[in-house]
Length: 85
Image (cartoon, rainbow, N blue to C red; front, side, top):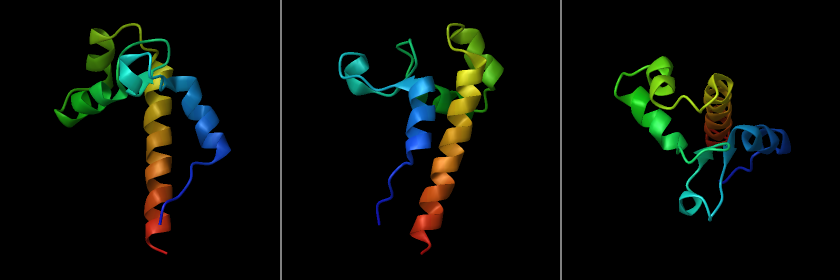
């Protein structure tokens, strides 16, 4: 069963990331940058911190990182709840 993001989730995500075929071939990137959100996930998976990530990518806003993580968590939980029905 495929679930759809709520309009509120879409709006919130559009404030912190962009998906544009003209930028990084449509790879989801942090807003107003060419830094893929996957880069943050890679940092965290290897045990590095958000501060480590921000030190390497100082153009990314701290609030965007935490907003992305919170929204990702909420969307994942929604997906899991729908899958359990």
